Every structure is written in structure tokens, then in C-alpha cells.
Length: 253
Image (cartoon, rainbow, N blue to C red):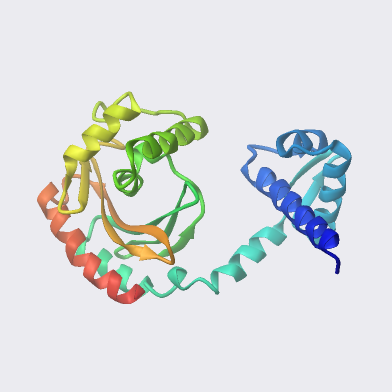
């Protein structure tokens, strides 16, 4: 294969992945024209890519012109999870941590390419959710804020701007500041012993907290606790997080 052929093949792969990304992130079906505009390619190129994705089972055609993700993506994602140890290895440790924090939920959160990924969401007495690919507003997430506090101010503000463009800036309680700069100041004041505890943050009567774990395969990772704020005091939440961290880090490493 010549260099030109290799470059062309890589460009085709990149365009195909970009189209899939737009289909998955869209709030509804897209036309080939809309896909082309979002991906910066001609409508003819977008139509060809969509046709190939439909044939492979990764996209489906709705009606005459619109396209949406198909079941092939779900099957691909489930099989991919079998190759990622973090989806399965910490499960028992997370369930033990949830038993220690009865009444609250524990989860692992990773910052992956500006997006929050949640793993092993465990609550005592309930089935554990191994993975949640749905992103979450950074300004309402205790692990998200914990990751931001490690970054230079400018980088943290850039990530918050991207999150705001995607999700808006809800203030479910008076504790949530109205500006990104003030948000970082409040979060920094709440950080103690590498643990961030935010009572009455996402909702009245609710607490969310996180402590940092070692990076996993180069990606920031945190252990989070959330639930009713009357189950434990803020200091009790910090103590449980530190106890649970030892269990979970041993399981992951």
C-alpha cells in the first residue's frame, strides 16, 4: 500500500468516526446535509459514509432522509467493555464500599477527553451498574470539580466553558455559584485532605463528595459518594471515602 493510499484510508476512518460521533451526540436524527455540515465534509461524502455505516449496522435510516445510531454500536460497546479491566475488576470492592456507606451510593469517575465516565455505581442492596457513558455537567459533579482543581486556572475555565455550552449552568441550590471563577474558589475552599465534600449542592438534602485515586491508564480517576445528606456528617463522609479508597485502589492495581 502506497503512502497516499494509507493517508486516504486514515482520513476515511477519521471521517467515519466523526460521523458516528455526531449521530450519537445529536438530540435526534440527522440528515446527510446536517451531518456534512457538522463534520465539515460535502453532503455527498456524508451520504456515502452514512450508507456504509447503515450496511455495517452502526447507523439506521429513519424515513427518507434521516439517520440515527443503530444497535451495532451497543453490541460493539458491550464487547469493548470486556477488554477494559476497570469495568469489572473493582466491582466487588465497590460493593463492599457501598455496604460501608449504607444509604449512599458510591461510584468511580474518570475524566476521559473532557468527558466524565462513571463506572461501578454501587448502592448497598441494589444491583451494581458497571458503566454509564452519559456525560454530566462538570460544575455539579464532585469528581469533576476535583479534577478541575488539579488544572491550571485557564485550563479549568476552558473545560467549564465546554461543559456550560453542552449542558447549560443549572443552579439547583443556592450553594452553586453563578460563575465559573467563583465555582472554582468555592470548590477549592471545600477541599481538605484530597477530598471534596459538597453538601446541599446538586439538591437540597443531598451531598456529593469525591476523593482522588491514582490515575488509571493515564486518565484521572476519582471515587465518589452521593446521596441523602442526613446519613453522615461531612466529616463522616470524608472518613468513609478514605476507607473505601484503600479497598478500591487495591482492587484496581
